[in-house]
Amino acid sequence: MFDAEVWKPVARKAEMESTRFHDLRHLFGTELIANNELPPT
Image 1 (cartoon, rainbow, N blue to C red):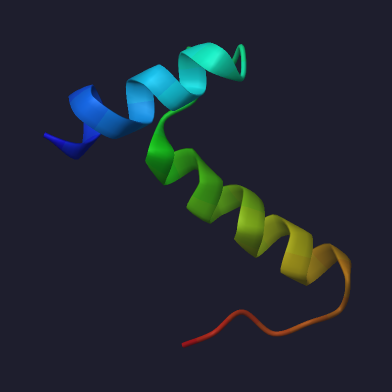
Image 2 (image 1 turned 120 degrees about the vertical axis):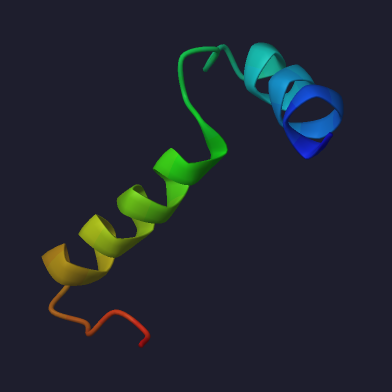
């Protein structure tokens, strides 16, 4: 439900149709590591 009702319209509006919501989790972790921060455990 979340994917179809919330994420897909938001991703479409942001011109990020190929991005899954879960991809943001990986991006966040990558950004933390790039900034010498520890990811939450």
